[in-house]
Length: 141
Image (tube, rainbow, N blue to C red; front, side, top):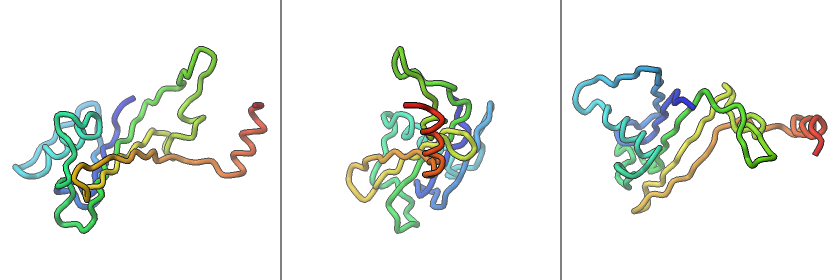
């Protein structure tokens, strides 16, 4: 998988949702205190939360909301996922892709508590009842 977009909302200096597009070569350039390190630290929190940990003071001080959201959109998702030696599936079959066919994961941290815990969410297209019944008749159980 390849990181396509980093999404920040209410994280440090980024009050409103901001989407940072990534490419094969991405550089962050700006004056001091522009938020370059914040972007890299948000990525560390999303992927590891070890070197830099989310802190209860990481919400934007210009906001009344203390929920911080860090999201990532991934392209080049695997075509199939092996569950065990007899069963495979895909993110598409499991309805885990967004409307662009990418994997979109958001981690939300409640900074109103001393040690913020993460809530992990996937933004995806969920089948309607009609789609679900079509899927059931198309694939015998």
